[in-house]
Amino acid sequence: MSGRHTLAETERAVSGRLGGLQLDFAAMAAVQNLHRTASAIRNHFEQTVLGEAGLSWTGFVVLWVTWIWDSLETRDAAEEAGISKGTLTGVVKTLESKGLVRRASLPADGRLVLLHITPAGRQLMLRLFPKVNATEVYTVSPLEPADIDHLAGSLHRILTHLESGRTAEAAGAGRRPARTTEAPSATNLRATAAPIPVPAPVTTAIRPSRQAPVADPAIRISRSPAVDDGRRAQR
Image 1 (cartoon, rainbow, N blue to C red):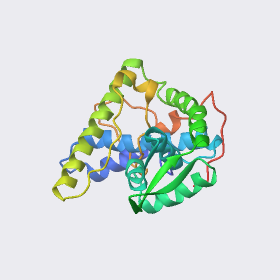
Image 2 (image 1 turned 45 degrees about the vertical axis):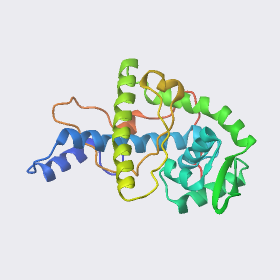
Image 3 (image 1 turned 30 degrees about the vertical axis):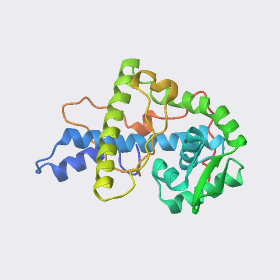
């Protein structure tokens, strides 16, 4: 169960409210269950492997993109982490206080700020990411390898579709397109998986009527046997 209502109760309420409308319930089920699962995954990571390292999910994602690019403008870091510049400021202050990143103004334009990962930040990521990946493996352990590859490929196609539309809109409006991190192919995703910023949790999750019942993701994702529970990092 996630929240006050069970998944079955939520599905019945949604069906009763929307039953008379002409909707694509399969698409609705896919997106709503994606939201719900993403929220459960985020909570699980924060309560285990990231909590042990003293990181929130957002802090980890910012540290990740800085580690991958070595340095990048703060506005790019905010875009890639899927957060506002104001939220990034607080996250970066926390990471700076831990000695994991540092900020520096661009020599050519003092208004722009570069975010750099520090040696301590690199060392943390080298120690932490194998544990993160072990938790990723645990998260998808109910699936067969072929299902994992199919899931990774399907999510990558959705992400590419949405990012291409956003880039086109930005170009039409004369805005600078957001830089995107090229995702690995489905065949090697499990070895080099990059975290994707998670949307805010929603409380509705439904299944198409043609599908067999599945367990609530919040129930199926529990403690990792390889990682003891850690405290939730202070945001």
